[in-house]
Length: 415
Image (cartoon, rainbow, N blue to C red; front, side):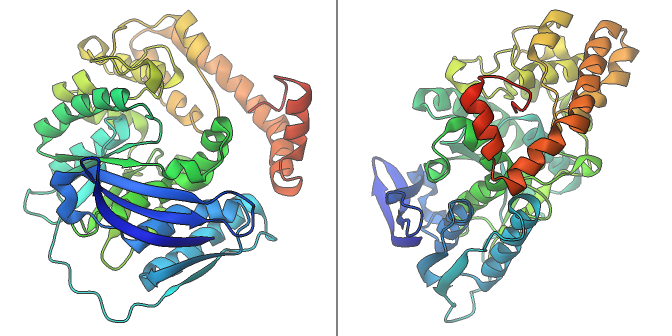
């Protein structure tokens, strides 16, 4: 893979950093990769070579590119970090025979200048993890501390891909940012396009397992003239950490000399995080957890029926604040709704497990029975089916699953 023609320009009323990605070994067509932001933030924005290298390294490894060639100076700390990330990915997912991508870049000709800025940022989706990160930061850091969050990065082009839907998100999250004293910075990117074209494959495996931390870190590097620290919000607490595309062993390795990237929030469970914001009225009115972005409407960003919505509503119910959360139009959860929405897997099982006792405490034994039944089914699957799936992933390169999908639309190995 070659990354060339790095350009910073003003285009369509925005600041735009772009580069051309040329695939050398896998037969894919050349692509343009870009990042954009509003002109008011252009002074702190750049076509940083670090950003394009971070954004491209995982797709290059996935598709078997032998190298990434970038004719620009790249921080040696970042280069070392990317080698470490690829080592973890090989250990976790690919197996020992997967070659690491060779990184061919220029060594810096001089030492970087000391950073004149002391701004910390977080990725601010409006979800539970980002709100909890901000709340903890406000509790623990005085305003003048260099770790105090001043900017929130909201990214378009990932789960939200329709401009009008992103406008709804931007308006809603802006209310929370204003209340918290954070400058909200919208960022637009097509970095998703260099991953798998199949949507299910992208979100099911590649994003979750390998790409999440890289994408957010790439975005952050385009703002390294403005920020010198960024928090990527953890989805899991310490007892439930597992191999993942955003992980405390992964994200800090995307740091450079002038930008520190932190994986934040592993000391708190999802229930603890939700409890932290349960008395934050503005957050309850503008909380966004739903990924069904095509269903977004003005002022309505949560469908109230998908797995994430229902699980979050369960947590708010257990905390006694669901009726106050106008971000959801539904304030009652039936066993039928829970049964239709629940999705029990290695990611979600800890979230449901920690709800059993709080739901028992408020007398929702009917909901507890649904959760326990689905947990038992999942545990049986983990003992019987998952070992086969893992063997297929590592040793058969997923061919068993592909064969199954060619025969059945659904079956015992469906993910």
